[in-house]
Length: 503
Image (cartoon, rainbow, N blue to C red; front, side):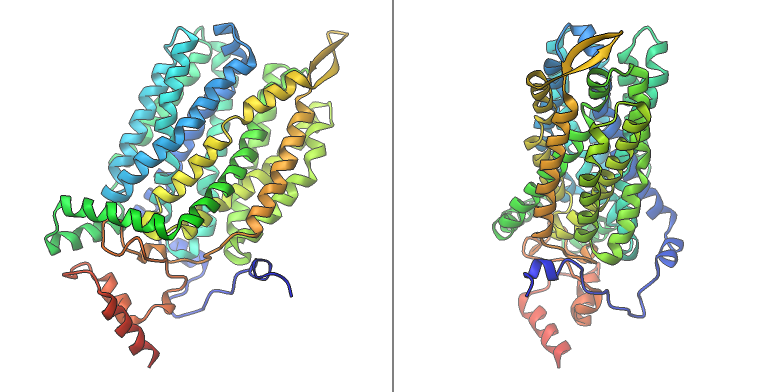
């Protein structure tokens, strides 16, 4: 017989009950607040991409500005990725303890201020210092954005919503590329104008989130705590205790999530961070053509939407596996062609697979996470994976320094870094790793994590998300949902409810 993780690659079909809705019905019944919360999370994640790729798209201009090599400039990318895990811990903890709204607002304001300051630096050391601090701000965005967007939506919509949400990253890359293509060449400030535009967009996202209400999950939990008469100090004490319980119980899951996100981050950064530099240096394209090819590659943001949608039916892991196979199949088209059309087609196909696989990640991590910590757990796993993969750009730059090829430039043979071979090898190896780690991993398809306790409630660290609402005894579900419950449900009550339902 096949191993369990292979037999379980396609999840069991969701139970059809009186409360089960079709996707179109669930979407039509969403309130304006649910729509607004989702799109505010999407916009926050889009801002993250705009801010991050401001450096990747400006490598050539930054080399001229600071008189540094490609390897030196990519140090800024590495430092940003290194410090993002710290930001994920800080803002994730704040979000799980105090709510989704103000931690995300503060996070976006901090990012906006630091991005604005980066546009005024005069030395390379100042630039590195600001980008390091910037990494702390960026680190909190993803976990908070996913929690804000996903927990307010019904289960039936979460696969599709996951794809749309994650593609905010591709949209952000696209916006940054368009600004770099049309605005930067027309301003005397050059690359600085890209950073200032990014700062303005992040501040707009902060204002938008500030005018929206707190997540309904936290409003109910805080009201229940208020009626019980529990103080802020006691809630913080409970939160710290439950965090320790969660780490003790789910340490193996934490390691797995970090390994998974390490592979995914190597996949995205390895195919994106130095792509414009690869086209200009190894293929001899102009900065304009390289930017256009980048835009074409990131026009496949619907790949994540498609994969997210089908993951609701074929399962999260199987959807990822299909996308990774697509990436591997089109690596030759990414590196072999010499024409603009061929390379643009390669970028389109590879990024369809990359964005498709990433489109499943928000809901896969949200369902996998200990439900009370679904801002901290996914965010920290994601950003530690980012930290481990932070040297991807420098690995490719170093590989290009040691692996050379010859192209015809201005009618003469010219020796240049062979980024095509370097990126092909890196993407191939990483794709194989992601395929393996995805297949052997867990899946909690259709989890009702919105029904779980919040992290400042007793027993939150032990709690598991409910795979199906009907699997939970009616007595226990009613007691858990009651916002005016005077005390936490005891273990004896849970066992009694379970026994009653069984009888």
